[in-house]
Image 1 (tube, rainbow, N blue to C red):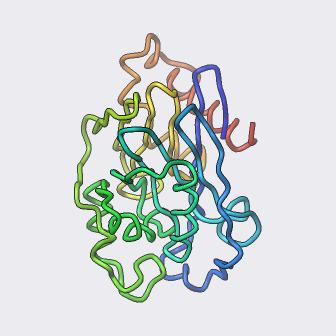
Image 2: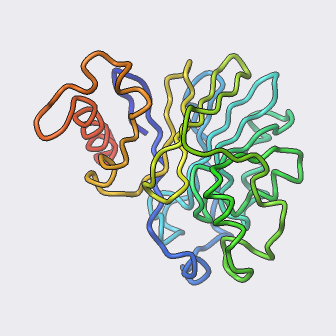
Length: 249
């Protein structure tokens, strides 16, 4: 997590492990505990234990976002299926209310395999159309799609274009589709009032720049598209964020 003058950026880091390798990755699910960090008054980040997941040594699996309040709970990603009860318990410690919505930022199992746990509690699953199609094609035997439970599949999908917006708990949440980056169906989630962005890209700086993750806003920011070195002012900003996140600042 990195705090800049422009706000707070929460980075989802996911190692590029092929789907067929998840089951053999040596993840110690029984040793994973869920840590909760408060990012804003009603916004939280959940992360797994360090040192028990070879693909994510800094914290098992992907990070989860939880927006809580009287309108219900909005979640970002669902972690591994094998720790669904631990994730649910962590969410309940934040707020006992209904889990209404869950969005997947990308297809990897540390972000989607636990979907069914929350769908069966009434959460409506959102994702890019490409992500849903990819999940529907997953083999039945991988750790990313155990038993091919149909409840794991997103039921509301969207493509490239304007952000999908939710207004709940005094917050405006934007689901911002981006061009192929970490995977082919990625979404950036922006909590407008909290000034927080959640992203899924375990990529190099060059790959992140090529994804043009700030494209929906470049033309709206004065000077965003002006030349700056080898790229634009927006590219310079993204490079700065990338370097600070990689440095853990």
